[in-house]
Image (tube, rainbow, N blue to C red; front, top):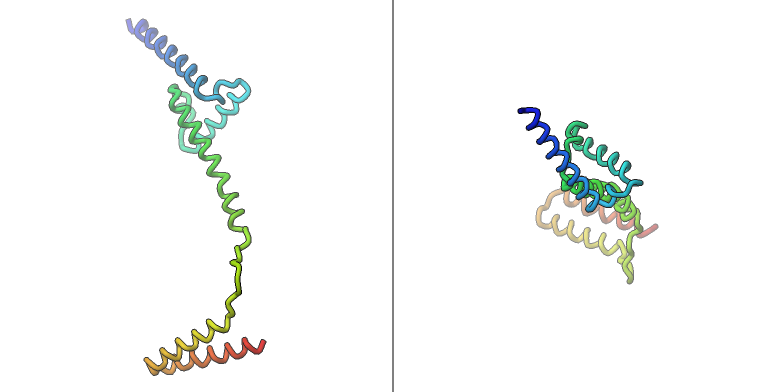
Length: 145
């Protein structure tokens, strides 16, 4: 009695697997092309192993929807792996220079000195006086060059 039930279950499962393979072949071009099938299966196994699946779990996958999800995950991963190359290209791109007259560095230095003198007037600390005097000396030495 058990052997007939097991045999019926096995036949039903085999029919299910055959139907799922046909659906996978219809919906996944890599799966239906005999030249690309082996490469697709190898890539799929490698990808699933990287997520922690073992060979037994991979062999039990029968639903074509899982195969479609795996294919999408593999294509996303390949796009994601290629993205850093594009980001490196952007990082190495030359900086854009705006048109117009460049600001001179001395104007900002004088403004910085005025701010430090204003701070000195408010606080009266010797450190603020030293900072203001050092900036004045540095600005003079930059202008001589």
